[in-house]
Image (cartoon, rainbow, N blue to C red; front, top):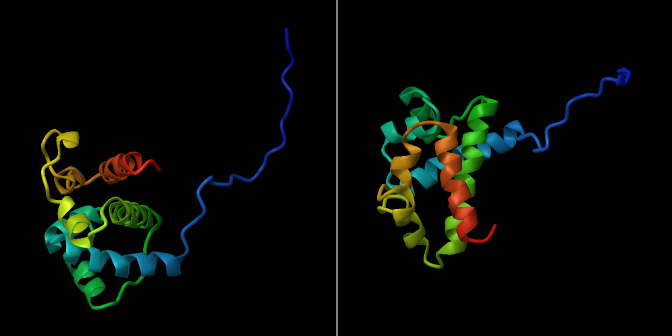
Length: 137
């Protein structure tokens, strides 16, 4: 019968690099602009941002970002990844912005925005993975 051996403890290191506070703030400012281009309402924005309060989103729109928690940074990162993928796939920027609201067979006839508005981070990640697969990423 094999004997168990003690293994030394090591510090956990995430495979993904941590998003800094400055990067989080920059992504928040960028997402405010992106939502404007996508035609996302303030209510929809708050859902996409994981239940962010309307008051906090209103402050974001004035440039007052404040602290961005880790989970929100993950949402922002995925939203920026969607934007990047769309800009690679479509040569005309407006087509990329419009795609988000168009019905798509890949999502059972729903739009990408409708899928993301289910509210979970995994819903946003689903759209990002789909676009990454389309662009061969």
